[in-house]
Image (cartoon, chains in turn purple, yellow):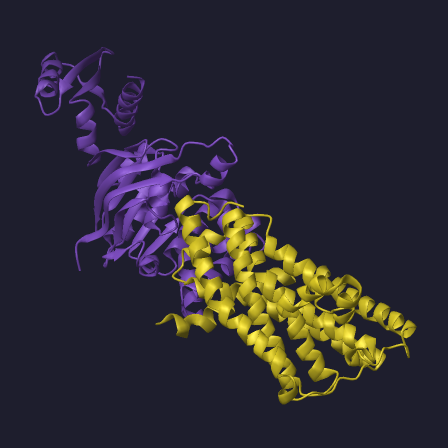
Length: 314
Length: 276
């Protein structure tokens, strides 16, 4: 088995204008086709947590849906563990679980447990195994109390956790998580992040394609991050290297024991911070606090968005 | 495990889901039973007006109540075969659950069969009620081979399911305004001889309009079932409607599956699978 869990090659997606010929024939106004993805290529390795960040409408959802076989690409290919997403879509669906923040994807008059049991049966799981699996997932995602409540009565956070539980039902080796912590309280979100980390570290590891607007979360979770803007992948690297692309310096703020605040800019890995600490200590003072201001993924994202806006205006 | 082995489990999944949803609206169930009884009772009294007036050329109409009840029970069944798939697709689209179903490793023919399984069970029950109430409360007699009648019922339902698949394909792409629904739904009650003999159409509306009944599978299915249940005919006497229904099946089954596959591909290309 190859080390690649997901391989995306030169993928483009243009949403066609429905009934364009008919509209043209009747001289009705015809909208321009929407170009959602343009020549996207990247690989995700087995056991990797791969982040996808971008603004609303950047193409994240389209990309996720193509990987999940729900939308067909205009050109290019997606393979999941060696299976082509168009020609071997059933195989691909066996390998993936998708959790979105879409609440309407469940049956509101069925309980959380009945909903999962239905989808488990569609996955071909035997009832006894499915019920045990659902019980385990409810325990893992702290959903025990919600099990026998109708989906419509669940809190937004529990609905979101149930979506993640459904994605994990058949223990797929690849998980596509679309903003899995969006509606969770801070503690529940941290618990979810811990679970995601443990999935990637278990044996055999689960590969995770993760989209989120919480950039701090992406930085802490993902081994690599792709920045997508207007359907194009603008950069792929580790969060650290992406930050370094934007700025190789950081601003340092030191507070000394006599209340003095010293601020200066240093280059990554230079020795100016050591020098400053020595200077303060030589003056017989103690350092009370040190803060650094580094570029975040938000700065990186803003940089690419600004570049795109400039390109479009030229 | 291959798809065929998993088919019963998946059908059961849909049936169990729909049963749960059905029992979450209990009042609706009891009201439907009462309405079937009300319809059968009304038809009984209307049939009394025609007692002794039946034209001998309409041999199936000697007991109008038996003919109407057979017609209604069977039409109910036929309409389910025709409409249940499009309805379930439309309902899943409106609920937003279609994508979740299609995300599981389930192929399209399985979705087609499984998503309408509960509708057929429900309709079997209510169709049976028409005949049961007629027999128990109003002494309606049925004769002939129930097995042969069931064969006709099954065959006509599968033919109508093919039209239902075309209707579902339409729902997938155009979302609303299904022409098959209008043609089959409104046309069957008027042209298939549910409430009156199809020969009367030719007499009063001319041969062109009268011949419309011949292109509806429901006409042949209903004729076959009535020949068996009301006139007591055997297999040798009902070969004509049987052959016509088989002809419909041979043409419509592959065509409808091909169209449905194309409709799903188109919806995936347009990204409109969950829109309604």
